[in-house]
Length: 269
Ligand code: ADP
Image 1 (cartoon, protein in one colour):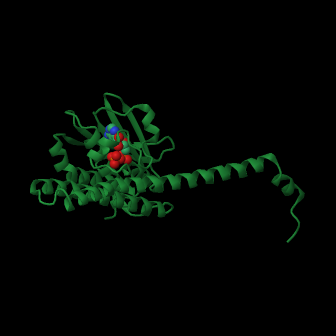
Image 2: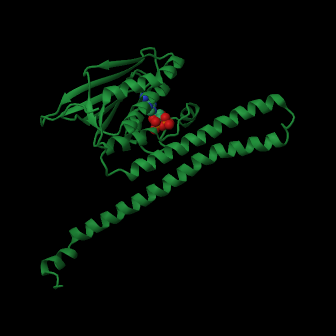
Image 3: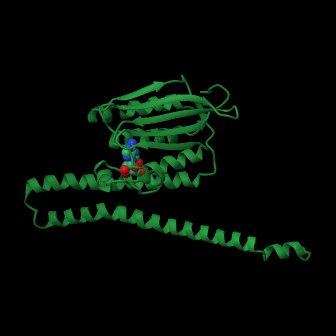
């Protein structure tokens, strides 16, 4: 091992290097803080339905013991709260699974048009229940991308479900599948989920994909939301090296646009 070169020693004490080290430290602190916030938020989110369950159990053991009507009603609420906890745990587990695999790009060939059709079929009953029409606009007959089919289904399920939950209107919801050429000559698949609902004020847009960020918490709860949907979407899209853009006009509606590299060769099964 030789002595460090004089220029290396000089660099180590240079203001630039110190600055980079400080920046790394700040970044690390920020990550630690984010992790701590996440655990605190997740615990809080789980504690709320749990407190409600405990409260109802106590009431059922005591004052409401012999009240058949109250028992029926309380059991209904308790079942809802238990479902909410289980949805939250499912979402937390998906998020951590996706994060663990973050560096691995999914390899399978998937047709996004099929994925979107499947999602529309699956959400048909919910759309009908809400009286909102789902329209698929196929500007491209197929959109082959490299990806994980289940994860991509999750992306569009979340986006279309959100459009139904927060963006429903008598103009319905459009899902547009298109292919487009980039400036460098490569091609991309572009899938847009467009609603004509109340829209999202600009100050919320940059924070929408943060875990547990919700514009209206009671409304999200009432819709069965966990506040993790868009965080999951963002992670899956990143894992596929894609991009998501959100544009919204208050009073007019919102568009979530997902862009992924189009695969070159034809679909193989
Ligand atoms: P949630 O489980 O609350 O639905 P998401 O992460 O999926 O969580 O969405 C975060 C928040 O973004 C929602 O609570 C809602 O306030 C807002 N949001 C999402 N999609 C739309 C939309 N299409 N129109 C208006 N607001 C939306």
